[in-house]
Amino acid sequence: MPTTAVIAGTGETSFQDLPQYSDVGICVLAATAAVADAGLTMKDIDGLLVQPPFFASPRYHILVSEALGIYTKTWCDSTSMGGASPGAQLQLAKWAVESGLCQNVLLVAGEKLRTVEMGGSEIMSESGAHNMDYEFPYGATVPSYYGLVAQRYLHEYGLEEDALHPIAVTARKHAALNPAALKRDPITLEDVANSPMITTPLRRLECSLVNDGGAAYVVTRKGASAHPSREVAMLGIGVAESYYHVGHLVEGDGRGHDLVRTVADVSGRRAFEQAGVTVEDLDVAEIYDSFTITAAVQIEDLGITGRGEVGAFVREGNMDLGGKLPMNTHGGLLSCAHPGACGGMTHMIEGVRQIRGEAGERQVPDCELALVTSASAVTSNFSATILAGAN
Image (cartoon, rainbow, N blue to C red; front, side, top):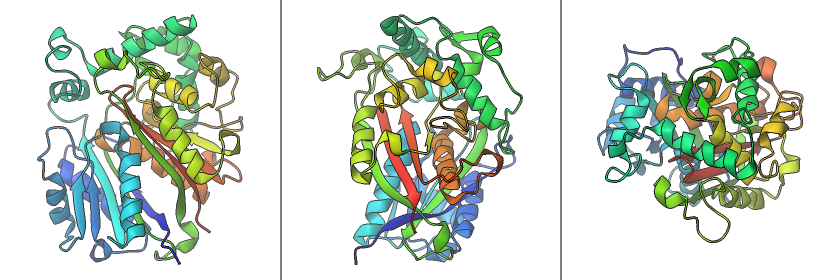
């Protein structure tokens, strides 16, 4: 019988300030929780994938391995796809388990994005998140790149500046039900419109949080964990990458892709085809939302709405709990937390919780299929994963 890989355990740290821990220490906290959730021990782990913080050692995964006490491994590596890493890592872990290379693969990331000396945007810009020769010298920061994408999006579809504000309001509605979320006070469309402009046209409440934290999960063979009834299957995983720099992204590929029509459609199509399901079959969507525009282009590229229609779709309550397709039920990066390297992993963990029926007040009733996405490099790299119960 072919080996089937499943997610058997997840773990997160607090998303409050964690100055007392190193980045590696935060990884240890999250990893320990995930391995315990799977009913395993560190001695059971023979594969390790780490998403390192910016400016980390190129052998960061070895440092994390030593801190965790994982001595013998058949696979140990770091991935560097930024926010898109969670889905790409998951695909690699699935292959490792199903090929027999590893028995139990631990995926972990942790970072002090808030209590480091430099802010997140400064770190990511100076580490080459965008073209260091032709873009960075002109003062571009990570938010400013997303502002350019948002400007183009609004222009393309003739929309007003407030078109994407409902995405932020919906995220906060769901965060209010999540005890772990950092921002739980309700906000209105007026609150978003009146919040300070960060980078035209994106306002503060349309930008993700910046905080410390870590997250992890364990991929193993179906039925091999201590709690088989809680195992979650990966029915389909798709990953797609385009150009890295904004100046080249606008060129597109002549096949319908450009700055606001991304290759998220490629990653989504692969995931849906592998899973044998469609958008209409989904019960919940956990969409990577570093900014409102990040979520918007993915929602449209995945075929959840038509082009230029996502704002109205969300405004009508279709992505609220109880709506057509609830989105970011934990509050997302906009209202729950954005702990840097592991930001996208929080979406995956929320998807697992929804499939397990462990999301508390924000639980989607009878949740059987969850879509989880991750994204990075503004609108360059994407992954899509379809989760379901393994039993």
